[in-house]
Length: 165
Image (cartoon, rainbow, N blue to C red):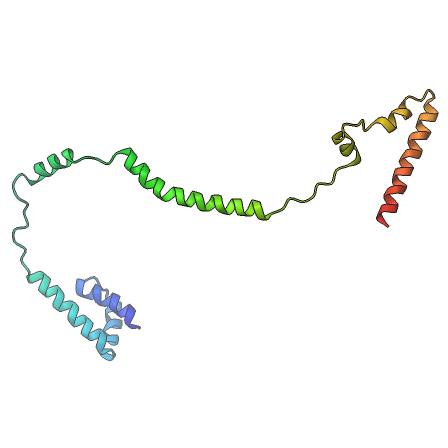
């Protein structure tokens, strides 16, 4: 048994709450540990001293309770503004720190360059993105229209392949 466990058991022994099994273990420890034996002696002396102490005059003065209630009712209660003022005193600096951190992050993080498609670029420049394809749809014969659309699709795929190489 270690001294820390023995100290808890000594407290129970002095209070009369220690079981017989723990009592035997504690007695074995007290035989080999003089500091725990001294602690037991000190606890017993303190308990005897406190039990011999007679507290006199423990009764409150007459009408104490009535006077206390009256005084508590006349005391000014803290207003809502005082409570809010205390809260603001703590919340405002925290808010400012968070705001500075967010501003720093937004300042340091640069947005990535946005890649626009060709249609988006034409719309941005106030041009009609369907100008090139409008001629295909104005063809009279459906066969000619389909062939032109097919070759235009093949041309765009060829441009994409060349860009990847």
